[in-house]
Image (cartoon, rainbow, N blue to C red; front, side):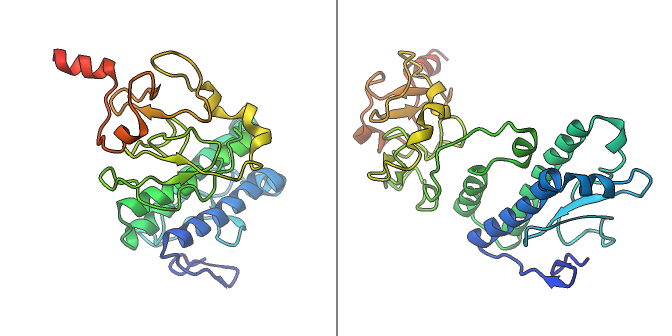
Length: 274
């Protein structure tokens, strides 16, 4: 097993160099880990013998997995998965052990993805785009434990454009998103960018059946306490991170385009007192 070009069973895996290639690499490794911890869990369990040395669970870009000893090179070419997962196997319930391995697997997947980003000089916008693409997928832990939240399918909503506060360009997102929010994801789930975003026209059929279960239903306006409406403009305070109807704080989409950092009335009052 050579992680320089990453060989497994004689297969040479190309080194990803772009955001899209790193994301594809991430998805392949993730799929392999999910197989080990769900579909092929009996095989995985048997290979994690506590009597053996420190073992690691590796996921590979071709959606396969392997339990093996860590590489001997110091430092290794790629970040290493958690060591010694086999030692805890018989010390806890199987579901708890699998959940623990899943958490460490999620951490490893992120470290590998951002290792490639650092190695090939990804800038701030590229790193943000990579994380957003990754963050749209359920984690391995969520899948293993069955605690998967069902988001709307808005793949592609993050692949365009910069979210620079000074750009003044509004990007488009899926119809499931509130109109005019300052970021392209669910409120409070990703970092705010200070940019107004508009809902995408069309695509009405996609995700309509899941609308009632969408997480956004739990998001309340910090001023009036009501839920969002699909045709309403929302804005997020960059200080307290609460969301507000634009009409409640007297901010229009046109005004928001020119706001670099929005402070809600409450936070503005607090700063003034200080």
